[in-house]
Image (cartoon, rainbow, N blue to C red; front, top):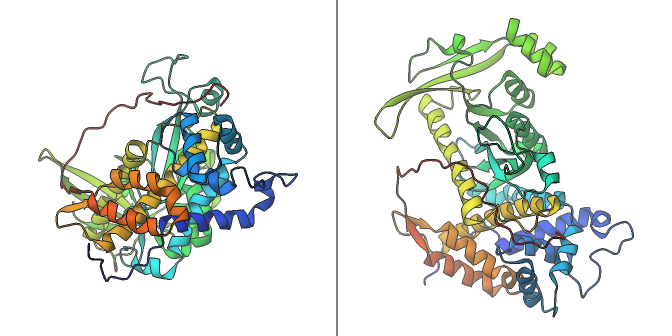
Length: 445
């Protein structure tokens, strides 16, 4: 196979993960090694980095089979399931979350990578959306996260335990930037604000936040205005219709929105700390009214609220930005279907939270490997690399890639082998969420 001569700005997936782990260890040595300084220090036992690689490369096997994979790849002889999971129980899930963030932050802050990222008018399009996730069913998890009664009037003890997964996703480049897991009924607007606060150290990279219905509120508009951030959000039915009701389809209008009366009273009840500022501020919001043709040939109208300027972003540009939001739905499908996010290592909260963040790491490593493979051999016209096969190759070769640099080239050649046709316009109906959580765990985990 003839290698491409195009410059490759992307780091090796395994090296990027090692770097993120190293940065976390450097900053949090006391947290990793415990109060007595002895955790993860014995040479013949699994290191902190070994445990992170095990989480990322887990294959959905039984706990002992997973332990055997780790033992075989590290040459440490015998490793029991209890030995592996006792080591994992010593790691706080926030550590895996921080490593996941560090991996993406390292990419976006690298000048060569930033130059190669796809943008719209110099800005990264980041979608935010929530998704229900099925969690292990012990009573403690049900009390903390909540259950789904499937639309029935009353819940029962057999209802599945559910959580709310919220992510920020770079829709044009494919990376999952940030992930948060909360209660089943947690407010998605609050989760969006939590994401943005977490990204405060590198928001200068200029994101545009794209959200679906349910996210817009004057609290969000105020939050974005205070931080000078851009957004494109689809409005619910009649939200602020007294401002945009007279706009013709395909047109836009910039309005000065001011809250008073019943609207302001609602803000005083829910967010009293910003009520005075909201009452005295006129928010410049641009409303864009679109007429969209559905798959069945009928038309529907949608209204978007944004603060992107007219000078750089036309109505068609705003419509295209919102259309790109669908990529986050595909990312959830990949993480839940291809990467088996909901097949957890155990029922304890610490373990399934680790698995969620490790799945995000595996997702981003797969995207990174695909970008490198496309430079080695671009897919033929009308085709794209198969994400599921690429993810499988990453997991099978993760440990070897860590030890042997030559394995990286083998990985890329294998990924180039598996392509699938691009089928524009294909869609499938959504399926109801069921408790499909299939786990293999011992009673003590």
